[in-house]
Each structure stands twice: as structure tokens, then as C-alpha cells.
Amino acid sequence: MGTVIDQRAADRRTQSRSAGIPWYALLAVGVAFTLFALAIPQFDMHSLKRIAVVLGIVLLLGAASEVLAAGATARDWRWSHLLLAALFVVGGIVALVWPDPTFKVVARTVAWFFLIKGVYDIINSFAARRSEQHAEAEADGRAPAQWWMPLVVGALEIGVAFWAVGYPRDSRSLLALWVGLAALALGLTKIAMALRLRGVRAPAPLDSLHLDDLTTAGFGGRAVAEGGRLEGGRAQRATTTSDRYPTGDR
Image (tube, rainbow, N blue to C red; front, side):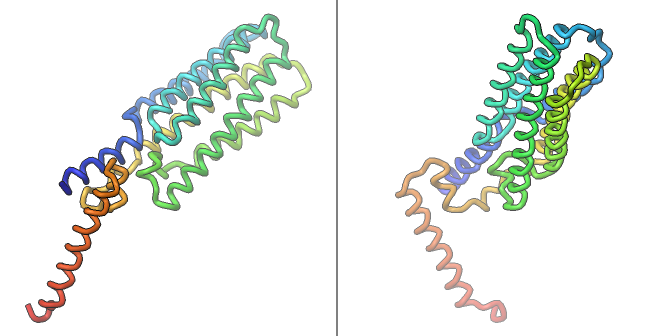
């Protein structure tokens, strides 16, 4: 019974970490966004409508990447990626269907994107840092490695948000640059997440699980009490044996 309990607890721990999305899938998405960001300034972006369409495509692709990230993160954190994806979908649809976008409309859409994503990335980085400090990487599903990368990217995103919302002149080339930076920010954060997932530590060995894992595995109070009684009996027998046969007398 002990082996079955331990195995079920270990399986439940592993399932709570992620849904099985491989880290290299996120890495590929991040690299693709980075290459796309480098290509955006080379497009013919003299029309505000064309810039808005490219921005809408970036936001919708960003929403798809957040759905993928939700499948690769811990169960307790999936809602945050899905919420971010929903916001990106709203922004992408607004950018695509706006009938006659002006510089202010596109600039403010970009600014809201950078502000929301910057705040999210900073919160995400501190959550990863807290996981490292409290040694909860197994339960959190996010490795502490590279936790500072979303922090740096988030701070830069907030800076670009204030730059975009407060820029006084009409500059289409600057709008194209901001859209490219939006795609670059999506790529860098996905690369950082891929590196964190790659550094996630393996699940704890079965013999290191404690009684708390019985409840996690789905066993009720009787099973926990019985497990505690058996564990206490083993500990008592081990103590009696060590007292009866000291090391020096063997």
C-alpha cells in the first residue's frame, strides 16, 4: 500500500507542475517572435491602417503563445496566461477592425499592450524569485533559473508604454518600431520561460514524500491516520534497535 500511495502522490505532484508542453516548443515560439520583430521594420509601413493590421496580427499571435504557455505552466498559474491571452485577443480585434485608425489610436493600443504585459512580467519574475527563495520549484512548476529576464523585459516594456502614450508627434516609423518591440518582448519572455522550464528540477524521489502527500494523492483521513501510525511504529522500532544495539557494541 505504501508504494501505491507514494506513486500516486508523486504522480499528482508531477501533474501539478505542467501539462507536458516541452520547453523547446516555447523556445521555438520565442525565436519565431524575435525573427518576426526584426522583419517588421522592413515592411512597407507608411499607412496607419497597415501598421494597425500588423499590430493586430502580433497581438493575436501573442494570445496564441499565451495559451501555449498556459499549457506549460503550473495549474495554479494557468489562469493568468489565459487572462493575458484574452486581453491580447481584445486588443488584436480592436486593431484589426478599427475603420480609420489614427496615430493616437495605434499608439495608445501599443501603450496599453506594453503596460499590461510589463506589469504581468514583473509580477511573474517576482513569483519565480519567491519560488526560488522558498524552494517551491516543484510545486510552482517554474524553475528559478533566469527569473530576472522577465523583470528586465517588464521594466523596459513599462518604459516603452509611457514613451508611446506621451509621444507628441505623428511618426509612422516610430509606430512600426513600437510594433516590432512588441513582437520582440513576446519573443524574449517566451525564451525566458523556456529556459526556466528547462531548468525545472525533477520530482522528488518516492522515499522523500511525507504524510502530507497522502492527502494530495487523494487519500482520506483514515489513510493518513493509518500511515501516521505505521510511520510512527517504524520510527519507534528504529529507535529501540539503536538503543539496544549501540554502534560501538556491534
